[in-house]
Image 1 (cartoon, rainbow, N blue to C red):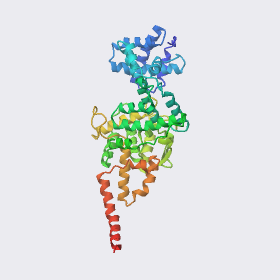
Image 2 (cartoon, rainbow, N blue to C red):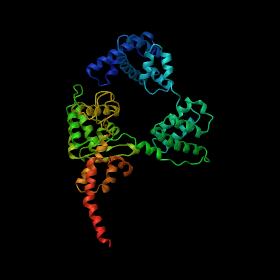
Image 3 (cartoon, helix red, strand yellow):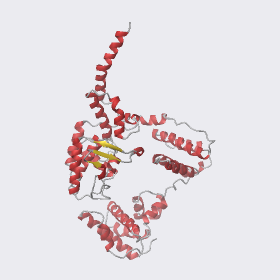
Image 4 (cartoon, one colour):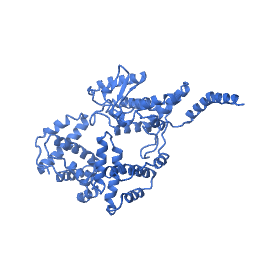
Length: 455
C-alpha cells in the first residue's frame, strides 16, 4: 500500500508536457489521468483497491480494449510518480514481481475481471530458478556473464528447464540424467530436441564447476542440424520487389506523422543496401552517421561487435535528405538521440515498431498475405538474405570470384567468420545459372587441359 501521494492537479500537466503528444492524444491522456487522480484522492491511497475501483468506474463506459489501453497510460503515470518519490511503489509493478509476470497487461486484465483474486492466482508463475538445480544454473549464468558473455539465450534455456522442474516436483530426488530425459520428452518438436541437447551441454559445464569429477560431455550437433533443415526458408526479394517496397514507403499514408514515410524508406534502404538487422536499425543514433566520410557506425551488436560501414552515394544522399527533414520536424539534435525519430514513446522507433511498419509495407506491396495469416510470407530479415544473394549475383556478373570476397562480406555483415555468412546464401535459379556459366567458362577449360595432358 502507498500513502496519500499527491494533491496537486498540476502534476498531470507537468507529466503531459514531457511526452510530446499530439493535441488529440494529450486531451485523452489528460482525461484518463485526471479521472484516475480523482479516484486516488477519494480513497486517499494508491494501492490495488484504488486500481480496481477505477477499473470498475470506467469499465461500464469503455470497451475492454479501450480500458486496457488507457490502463497503460495510468501504469506509466504511476511509474513517473515513483520516480518523483510521490508514491512508494507502483501496485502493478509489485504484483508483477509477486507473481513473476513480465507484462502489465495480464495484471490489468485480472484486476478488471469479476474475481480478481482468482484471476491473479491463475497468473502466478514459478519463481525464477527456484528448483532443486536453480542455484547451480543461476551461478553458472552469472559466471558466464562476468566473463563477458551476454548469455541471454542460454539463460532462457535454463529458465524453461527450471520451470519444468518446479511444475514436476516428483523429479526433485531423481538423477540429473532422469530430469533431462523427462524434459526432452515434454515436447516432440525438432527445435525442442536441439535446445535440450545444448541445455544438457551447458548444464554439464555448470555441474563440473562444482564437482570436477562430473565427466565432460561433447555437444552432439545432429539435433541442431535436423532442426535447421526445417527452419523457415528466406524469401529472396528481386530488385523489382525492393523498388516496389521503396515506392510504397515513399507514399505511405501517415497524416499525423509526416516524417514516417521518409523513415520507412530509409529503413528499407539500410536493411537492403547495408544488410542491417532490425535491432541495429532501432539502435542507430544520430551521431552514428558520418556524412563527411559516407559511413555509419553499428555499435555493440551481436557478439559485442562494432563496425563502420561505407555506404553508396545514393544511400548517403537519402540519409542527408532524411536528417534535414528530421531537423525541420523538430527532432532533437543530440548525437545520442535515435536516428529514426517519432513523437510517441521515448522518441525513437523500437524493434517492434520497425517490424510492424515494414510488415505493413510488405502487405501493401502484396508480397505478404494479409492480417490474420500468422507468420507466413516474407519477413524484414529476408532483406538481409536478399542483400547477400544479390551481391553474389553482381560479383558473378562482374567477373569477380565470390570466394575471394566472402571474408569482406562477412565483416560487413558483422559475422565472426564466413561460416555464418554462408547460411545467408540461398541458392536461387539466377545464382545457379551464373555459377554454371562460370564453370562453363573456367571449369570446362581446365578439364580440357587435363584431358590433353593424359596419355
